[in-house]
Image (tube, rainbow, N blue to C red; front, side):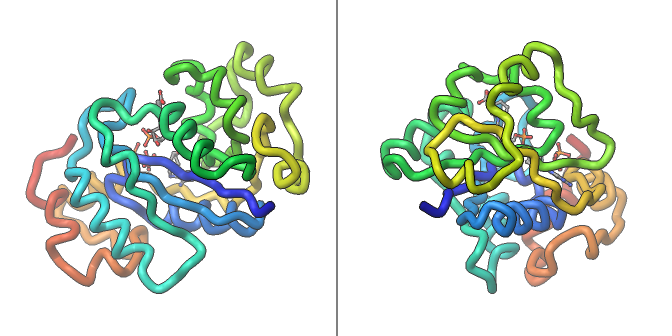
Length: 214
Ligand SMILES: Nc1ncnc2c1ncn2[C@@H]1O[C@H](COP(=O)(O)OP(=O)(O)OP(=O)(O)O)[C@@H](O)[C@H]1O
Ligand SMILES: O=C(O)c1ccc[n+]([C@@H]2O[C@H](COP(=O)([O-])O)[C@@H](O)[C@H]2O)c1
C-alpha cells in the first residue's frame, strides 16, 4: 500500500527547503505527503506568525500541485502539539497503511526529548531528511534504539505499517526559517528562498516585516 508520509513543522514561514525535501521524500518513498503545521510547537518559543497566518502561507505555497497536501488537524487541539497523539489519530483513521514521519536530521537528533518518543516506532516509520550542517550521527541511546530498525529499502517501508527508520538522501538545501525571519525583519527580500506564492499577497509575509525578531 502506498505509504502516507507526515511532515510536521512550525513552518514560520514555509520555505523552499521544506518544499524541496518533502517533494523528494514523496518521490523516494512513492508516498502521499501531508504537511502538518503545529499549533503550539513543543520545545520552542512561540512562533512569530499565528497558526492561522502560517496556514495561509502553506495554502499559498502548495497551490498548483497535488503531490504535497495540507493537514491542519493539530490546529484543532489545544495544548502542545505532541506528535505521538497526532500519530495515534492517523493510525485510527488509516488502519494498517504504512505511515512515515518525516524529520529533518536536526529534529531526528533531538528525538529523545520528545513526549513518549519510544512509542513512536509502534505507530510510524521515520524518514530522516539530511540537512546541511547537521551531523548524520545521533546520540548513543537514540542510535541503540534505531539501529535494529534501519533500512535503506523503500520497499520495506511500503510492506509494513510502522517500526523502521530510513535515511532519505534528499538534495541538501541550506535554508532555514530563522534566516528568512532575520532577512525579512532587516527589510530584505528573500524571494528565492521562499515559494513564489508567498509574494502574491503582501499580507502573507507582513508578520515578519512588522514585528521584532523572535
Ligand atoms: N532545509 C531543510 N532541509 C531539511 N529539513 C529541513 C529543512 N528545513 C526544515 N527542515 C525540517 O522541517 C521540519 C520543520 O522545520 P521548521 O518548520 O522548524 O523549519 P526550520 O527552517 O528548521 O525553522 P527554524 O529556523 O525556525 O527552526 C523539521 O523536521 C526540520 O528539520
Ligand atoms: O511530540 C513532541 O514531543 C515533539 C517535540 C518537538 C517537535 N515535535 C514536532 O516535530 C515537528 C518539527 O518541529 P519544529 O519545532 O522543528 O518545527 C513538529 O511537527 C513538532 O510538533 C514534536
